[in-house]
Image 1 (cartoon, one colour):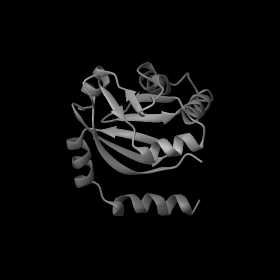
Image 2: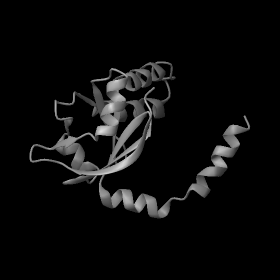
Image 3: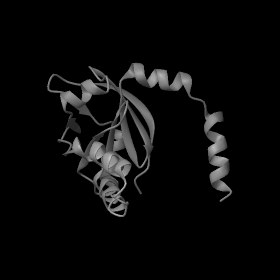
Image 4: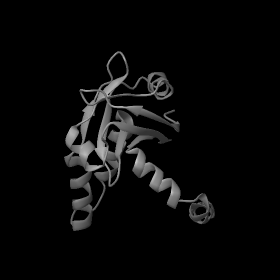
Length: 147
């Protein structure tokens, strides 16, 4: 099962490569996953293992594409997506333009979020943590568990 948790801080090398933490590589290896998809979010980069990305692709296939909002969401999500395969040292190459758009310069915070990873600029990750509390999210979780 692809289950990621925890967070790590790492640096990009001179070729804009990032070393995926060993803990996360072990999860990928245990599931036989060697291809990842990088997708730009609003403030960070998503890193989807191939099976998760393919499931997204299938799920979006059932959306009503007569709705402009659906079309725009899929356009934005998939238009910048690209695949990477970690090298023997566990490094993945990141596109400089996408890093620039989400504020990633040299340092990166890599977080595990259930079935995916997220790459954040340290400053943006800190801002998110400072303004977010679990209390605000727990009401949402409570309402979902009652359905």
